[in-house]
Length: 351
Ligand code: NAD
Ligand code: UD1
Image (tube, rainbow, N blue to C red; front, top):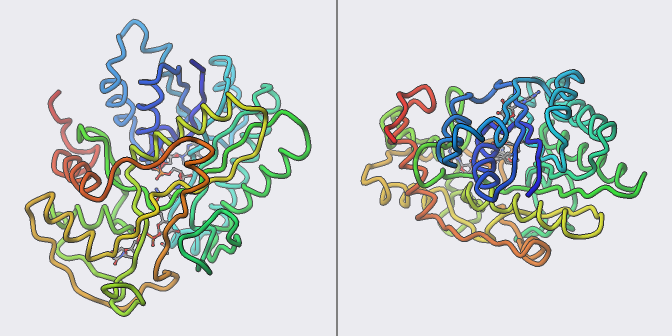
């Protein structure tokens, strides 16, 4: 059992990971400025983990604060003796990063630098970092191994590549760092209870939340970006990973880091399976019993035809692999969307 600092723990991936870590017996300190999340997510995590009220404050401490603010970081590192950090906090919208690159370099890069400096002061040298498959850009080979070139094509991707570079420099500069950079493919789905899930602000940019919002009646029609890609049905193919599999991947990475000599790990977290846009539409229709009307439109600039992970290394180094497929992704994502049509702004579901 360890005491962990979780930055961005109220967000989509962070909240599911917090639940898995609490269920594994760890104590958590969450630092989140709630710029893209709701404190309600963590209340539901505490309830799903069935934390007795007497221990709740010790098991799950929540600090509203910013990773760029040294005083907020100091508060987090003095709230408890932190054994390891899982660093989710950051901005993730590709289009916004093109419009506002300074924001992305500020939060994702300078914020990570600030966090690492606070870790050094606190003597904490174990870190799991949220990286992204976005840094492969247009991949030269599919499935994509970790040895593929890092060639991001937008400021968001550049910010992730910069932090990976910084982590490698840091690990080389002094012994003792235990670091895992986890390159996520396409995280989707929700906890099977339907009580926590993805709650995007405004119109979703990503396919999965858009489809579930069409199915629930919040949006009229899906636009399918391109039907002339060199894929089986002409629509884009991606490696969709259930967020609970992803959460379990973080727990496995932590166990590996804490149980082995210091090292720097860089691993893809994906399923190794690709699904086209139309396959996802059909799977969601089948899980929901609703129709998802769609129109085939032009390709979206910056998209690749196919991105699929080679997950061999994660399996070998972490003893982890995905256990849930597209049917579970759609079942759980739909349960969340149906119970919370307006996300965390919806009335809380009973139970
Ligand atoms: P999210 O926006 O749901 O979660 C990020 C959390 O960080 C939010 O709770 C937000 O309030 C918080 N945050 C943002 N800026 C902060 C700051 N300055 N200080 C403190 N907290 C701050 O996103 P997510 O989907 O859970 O993604 C988590 C991480 O994984 C991000 O770093 C993201 O770039 C990365 N990632 C996400 C995806 C994806 O598709 N969701 C894919 C690859 C990588
Ligand atoms: C996008 C980001 C990527 C990020 C990832 C996180 C872009 C260009 N890339 O990847 O950097 O790491 O999210 O999950 O934004 N699609 C539609 N209609 C829609 C939305 C999407 O047809 O309304 C298609 C896309 O063209 C693509 C697939 O669905 O083929 C998946 O898209 P999306 O969910 O946005 O993920 P990525 O493009 O893989």
